[in-house]
Structure formats: structure tokens, C-alpha cells
Amino acid sequence: MRVPATACSRRAAVAVAVSLAAVACGSSGGPSKAAPGFGDRSVPKELAADQTLRAFSFSKPMSFDPARQGQETFAGNALRRQYAEALLKPQAGVLKAADLNVSGAAAESWSVSGDGLTYTFKLRKNAKFNDGQPVRAQDFVYGWRRLIDPRTASPSEGAFARSVKGGMEAAALGPGTDAATVEAALDRLGLRAVDDQTFEVTLGQPGPYFKWVAILTAGAPIRRDVVERFGADQWANKPETLVTNGPFKVADVGQTQTTMVANPFYWDKVGLKRFVAGYGLDPTPRWTQYLNDQLDVSNGPGSESYKQALDDPRFKGQIIQYPELSIQWMQFNTAKAPFDKSAVREAFTKAIDRNAYNQVAADTGQPFDTLVPQGMPGYNPGLGGIQAYDVNQAKSLLQSSGISTDQLGGLHILTGSAQESNALFIKDQLQKNLGVNVTVDSIGDSATVNSRTKKGDYNMLTTFIGHAANYPDPQDFFDVFLSTSPGNTSGWKNPDYDRLVTEADTSTDASKRSGLYDQAHRLLLEQAPVAFLVQLQRIFWVKPWVRAITRTPVDAAYMPGDLYSKDIVIAKH
Image 1 (cartoon, rainbow, N blue to C red):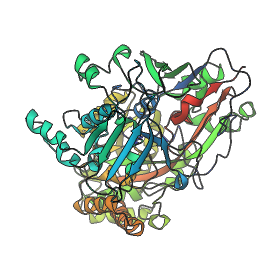
Image 2 (image 1 turned 180 degrees about the vertical axis):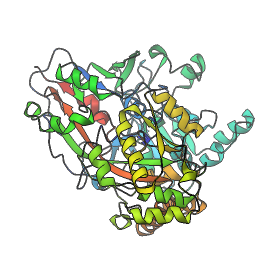
Image 3 (image 1 turned 30 degrees about the vertical axis):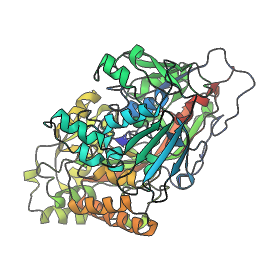
Image 4 (image 1 turned 120 degrees about the vertical axis):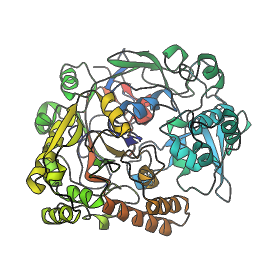
């Protein structure tokens, strides 16, 4: 899940600020502290009469259309997993990313051709949309066509277009392309409904990671009749017309929260009756609600009280803490001076003390200076140090750029109010170590931050920016920085990087693939379109009555076990 200026695909985010979650030492194994029900799928003997889970979602999604609700907000990927279901999903209860595989979701079984190019998915015969209509293979064909269709402008288009035969050609068609040409390109896609229960996908070339693309809920089935009846831009705007196939259905979208209820037609049992996700970037009111038993899940207080809350005996048994496959970085706008010069970017990157930064950001984890997180396949500790803190080298790089500190006046760091303290720390580091004065633009409105990021209206960006794993394959991280990636908002484009990553993405030789990714990784670190800062850790406070939480390494930012929320129940209390 790319985590953009507000969000992170996953992706996303896509992901969370370090003030809300910090980095863990060690691999992506089990938790250091566990709440009741953590990893325990058993149901308590006595259940509460009210099976409502009260959680939080950092901000209101800009759209509930699975194709359009990408990682533009944290809520996007997280909420979508509740009301839309993909073909496959990550295995339940497997905590190490290297051991994770896929299991059936809307598809009950699947097979792969000998050449690795054709995937055949057999859909569940009892899979239904929330209006009672059966889920058909034709609905997946239509849903995936919409994703790749350039007129949809889906933030999740990339992974699907790069996988499906003909996808890149269709996605590359410009906005002025006539409808007949676009439709012809979509007709050539490697998507086919063999029959109502059989969905066939033909890849353009072998993709070792494709099984993971099939878990993305952006690729949920979409009903053509619903979209055509209510309009492509309107069908997902109201709960009564939002026809989806997940375990929950959206019942109400308010200014402060989204309420979902169990989908009575879902193919499997759903424990919860209601799932309420409140909005808000400020952790303070959420923490107050948690203390008053008005919220069942919280990510803790603000950074000032974080350590104290972790050690508070009142919360013994309520803390869920585990490493996350997620990286946070500071992004440079490489399309504008002075960050169009790699030497300037490198200088700024090396002027930041990540150990001290981590202390400002709650001091509950470790600094990190590479793209692929520890615990993730493709992690290479040998690449650490390229962006390491080194004041003398930072000064030398800045001098070699030919740009004086006087010429760097007027630079701004764009950040959200929830991460203002982190941005102020970076401001102080640049002043102290390079003699560069910058201004922090702290904005509380996430939509404004997101809009400015997309327009390139910034110099440096620190708010909620990074990437959280959608699935445990290095392709998910490296593709973020491809020239064609919608998630690459830094403006950085490098043909050598594109070539290396594209070749690695399609290689079936594990050793060759790893070597190609390492070459691309080194190039990215040296070119420094972003300054990698920390690997995140997820920490939640969960009420003891929330049971049967089943976690995976790729859970979303707002809720442990969100991929299996259907199994959660509320114990009598």
C-alpha cells in the first residue's frame, strides 16, 4: 500500500506516521506484547449482545469505488478490505512474511499453466454481492477492465496493467484517445470469463508475484449493470447503490465515521454485526474515547504520552505490538530546483540523524535507510549506510553541487499537523548541519496536502509518506519508483532503474531476480529521490473484549487482523 501525502498503496496506504507507529527491531515475527485474542481464532463462550466493533480510520475515503479508492487516504485500502473481496487473500495467522502464501477468497481454487502465463480461478458458487446477486466471472472481467481503462484513472492500475497481457498498452493511451480505440485495446486484454464460475487471466509475461496481485481488493468484481444504471461517477457515492461482495456492506457515510454492517449474502459466516470506523488524524480524541470505553481499538495517545501509555499497568494485556513491513521517508520534489540535482538531495539525506529523529517520533523503534523493510523478502542489510547520517559528507556533497546555502533560501517542508514535530526536527537538522533555513508548512487538511503533492506544489514532503507492503514480494516496493507508477509523486524518472526493475519483475530465476533488485536498490539510494527514515512498527491498544483477531504481515494501518475482520467477535463484558 503506497502511503501518499495523506495515505499507502496498502499501497497504499498506505501506513502511518511515526508519531502513530514506530519501528521495531528484529524480524517480522510474533508480537512483543499481546492482547487477548491476538492470533487466537477461538470464539469466547459468551458473546456480547451488541456485536459492534468501534475502530478508527484516519480519514474519510475520497471514493468508495474499489477501482478509485486507492491509497489517496489511509482509509482507502483499509475500509475497502471490509466491503470488497478479491479473488485471493493472504493466509490467516501466518506471521512471518517469508512463510506467507495465499488462500481462497472469492475464488475457492485456482491453477497456473505450465508456462506460468495463464491463471484460472474457480469462483465460489455461493459467492454473492450484497444485493443477493451471484458473483460471476464476467464481473471480474469488467472490474479489471475498469482498473486498467485509462479513463478510470485508478490509483491501483499499475500492478494490474503491468501483469495482464495488453495492460500496459491500454493504460498508456492518452486522455485524448477516442473511445473506439480505448475499447479495442481493452478488448485485447488477457481477461476472459470461460463461464460464470471460471475467470481466466493471461499475463503478458511470467510474473512470479501475480498471485499477490490477485489479493488486492482494488480488483474486486464490479457489476456492469450497476455502474451503467447509476453512472460511473455516481454508483459508489451512496450506500444504497454501492453493490459490492465483501463480508460487510457500507450502511452509512457520515462526516465523522463510516458504518458498515454484515453482508447477509456473504458466502462465509461474519461474527460482527456492525463495524464503525471513525475519522480523524489527531490521536488525542481517539485516545480519550478509548479511555472512556467509547472506542475498542486505538493507536495510542500523541507522541508526548506514548511511552507512558506503553508502560501504564492499566493497559496490561491490551497492547498489541508487532513489526510492520512499512517504510517512512521524506520526499524531494525532483522536478524543481534545487532538488533536480542529485548531489543536493544526497546532501540533505545525509544531514538527518535518524537515531535522533526516531527519538522525536516516540522512540519505540529503529532508524532505517533502505527501501525494503527488515523481515520482507528482498531485504538486503548490505545496502544500509548509503544514505547514512554523515555531516561532513553532506557538506561536501552540497558544495560539489555548486549551490550555496544562500541560494537554498525559501525552501518549504510540507507536512500534516499530526507530524509537525517530525518536520520541525528535520528543519533543525538542516539548519544545524548544512546552514540551510527552511519553513515548515503544517496543514491539518489532508485533502489539501494530497492535492499539493499531486500538483508538485512542494519542495520537501514529510507527512504520512512511505510505503506499506500490500504483499510480501519486493516488486511491491520497487514498482513504486518506476517512471510510470501513479505512486511516484517525487518526479524522479530513471531509465536504468526502470529497466532493472522491469527485468526483475518478470524473471523466474530467484537468484537473478534478487541481483537485479539489488542493483536497482543501490541506484535508488544513490540518486535519493527520497530520504529513507524509519521502518514502522504497529502498536495498538485493544479492549479485552475484542476477540478472535487473526493477524497477517500485511494488515492495514488502522486495525490488527483487518483482512479477517469477519472473524472478530465481541465477548460479553
